[in-house]
Image 1: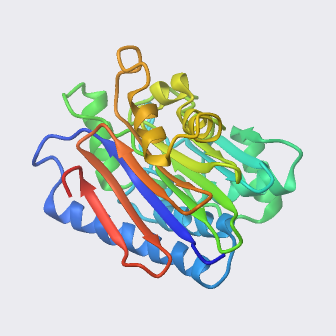
Image 2 (image 1 turned 135 degrees about the horizontal axis):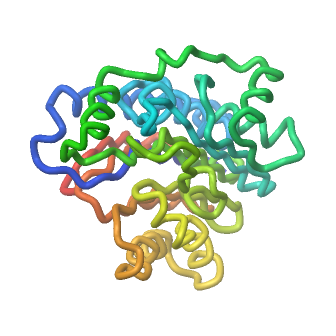
Length: 303
C-alpha cells in the first residue's frame, strides 16, 4: 500500500477579527508547515504512523506559538500542567500523561507510558519519574512560560475580559503498511484550576485510533469533548454505522449540540486514506498532506 496520509491541528477556537495578529498568524502557519513536513517525511521514508504522529506533535510542542509543550497555558497559580496521549491503531495500545510539568515533550512521555509501563495513563510525579527513568529531556519552568502566555495569565487573574485559549495540538496518520495512529497534546486552558484534566489524554474522549476504522484527534472545549466521547463517537459511526469519515466527524461535532455547547474540532484519517477536518469554530489551525500531493495549511474557516 502507498496511500499514506498525515493530518495535523494546532487548536480550534472562536476568535474575534483582529484578535490574531498578522505576525502571530504567520508564526502559526510556519509552525504548521514545519510540523507537517517533519511528520510527512517519516511516512514518505517508510516510517510508521506512530513515529509520524509523535514527530509532528513534538515539533508543535517545541513551538511557543501553540498551546502545548513550550507554549502551554498557565493555571490559576501561574504554572504549567500538560496532558498528552498517543495510540497505535494496529495494536490498540495507548499511553497518556496528565498534569505533567518540566517534560519538554509530553507526547514522547506518553509513548514511554505505552511502551515502557504496564499502564495507559500516568499523572503528575509518577509521570515525571518515568521521564527521568527514560532519560527524556526536562526543562526549567521558565522554558514553558512565554511572554504571550504570561500576559494572558495576568489578564485572567486580574479578571480582564479576554478569550482564554483552550487549544490543543494533534496529528493522525496512515502509513504505507496501512497502520493508523494518533497523538494529541495540550497545555490546557489558561487560568484552569490546578489538577484539571482535559480531553486530550482521555482515550476515546479526545484521542482514538483503530486500524479497522480510523484515527481521530479532537480540539476545543475539553469538558464538552469528554462528555460526548467524541473521538470514539467518530470511530463508532465509521465502524458500526458505515458512515463516510467526513459525515461521521460532522455528526460528532453536532452531537447533542444543545447539551454539548462549545468549540469542537477534530481531524481524522480512515483506513483507506480518506481525511476529515471538521470544526464549529471560526478558527482551526490545520494542515495535511496525502501521499505526494501538495501540502495544505489553513487557519480560518473560510480558507
